[in-house]
Image (cartoon, rainbow, N blue to C red; front, side, top):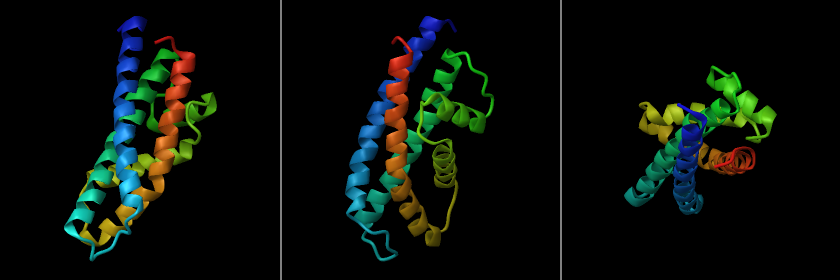
Length: 150
């Protein structure tokens, strides 16, 4: 893939990230008014399920698409996820590699099976890390637009 194609790919990924973050923000605002509880209503549970799904999607787009393509375009060598996050922090593309690693771990938990008892913790952790994910997405977008001619 040539550089022009990679720039076009990154531009598309940034558009997908913008849509994903917008949707995540809406779910985050809605769920911030709720408290995860074993006795929550079905509607509240659906809201938290939507939040976790949107969180996982936004995390994937940011870490597996945008940042991966960005590192490739910058011709940097970062073969593993942790290497990429550390490099992106060093370059100033994200505020914290540690936060993105935590976000990725939570995304993996969301993607795998969990018990009903774990749901309340999962919902609370998703609420806790959503602001960090949204901040990292904004930082990565700003960095990409400032460093790459799209």
